[in-house]
Image (cartoon, rainbow, N blue to C red):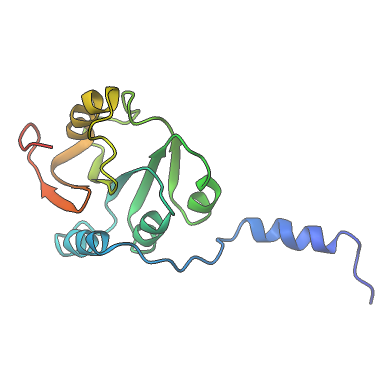
Length: 154
């Protein structure tokens, strides 16, 4: 039986719906935070990642069962993230964030890009506190903190 001329296109189209293989591991701080979250009873919790990086953190957390939102103004990894179940938000972190108060159990900014960046430095701390649930966790750089709303220094 001869293959239809459309067969290669059809196979490629069908593959779009399935996640591409992804085997990169996140850094040790992310592994530590995820263990902490899972042992704190936050399995299936909701988290926000500031910036997508190489997508390893988002994919790792989604595979552990967390609901992961990624906020980044660069869309290079959007398809990869969404194919693995993360929710992508094309939005700059230096503008007010488009999330409800107390929406996230944890917020991650691995690269700590908020430091020393003008407008972002003004917006980031307040928005982080606003969207984080009381006693939520945040990871900035490699430092994990648990803060009560309104307390703690960033």
